[in-house]
Length: 409
Picture 1 (tube, rainbow, N blue to C red):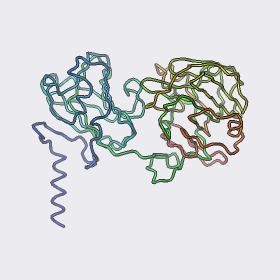
Picture 2: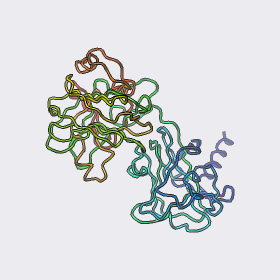
Picture 3: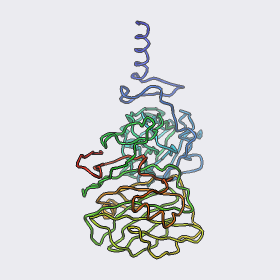
């Protein structure tokens, strides 16, 4: 028993006292909550940065697994002197991140990294700079490696950025210590928990987006990548605040593609995909609820909206396009908005429920069955009954048929 205790003390001291590994000084920030044993999952993943100063400073140098810190020897990344430069790694899927280790440049310019922020989340937009912050780097010495605790933050993208100034960003190593985030839902809408195998989803519940200065949003995870040549998307929408402004209903965005459905103005709805848009005149949304579907196929570009089981005129849109995978799907906010004021203008206020998506165009009788809540094919892209989701901000999870409220934060 005493021997085990002594070993524990040695391990604790190893993490609390700055040390050297292969000649590199390693310091641990807030080690008391950094789990020991989570692997580095960044090596070999997809990296990018705001710009590249020269080939020698490409973004992949930060995830090669080496603590070597000489830019001249080809060990480090380097951007141009950008305004708010960033570096990002795509982990391919969502992880629970315990810590991020960063190695500073060792041959010069150690102060450039001062004030840099570590961001983690599910949004690749603008290099991940819209994601929540894990930590701020106050200072680092030449060639120093520091571990920053992120306390289990969830996300697919890890970003290092220097906000508020024009600067070079150079990173010699970024290690992401994490474990897989396997089907995370909100337990009663209060806190994220790891699902043990039962798909809880949102069956019998609705997402309520209140009108607030800073809108909340919900990131939803597909059952398979959105690599699509056709699709049908359906949802039930209830709104109260309707004017002539835009309202985002569905937002999907990857680095190379996007799919958005908006209520553009009174009686006008838009499908935006692959940089092209098509508009439809439809009955407006209602405080009593509306059932909305959209279908599209690539071969002929045939596109249609369905409102409460009735189909609009068909239009030709984006013939030959293939929707690209690897993006983030969001309800409540428009990922394409360029500014906070634009975001606020497009934010969704109301309730969304019964969202389903298929990788094919449903037949007329199937869409009518979805509208009438009769038997219909399970959604193989999104299925409300087994939906994986993550709430950010003040979005409420409410039961459809009673007054017991569940809150997400």
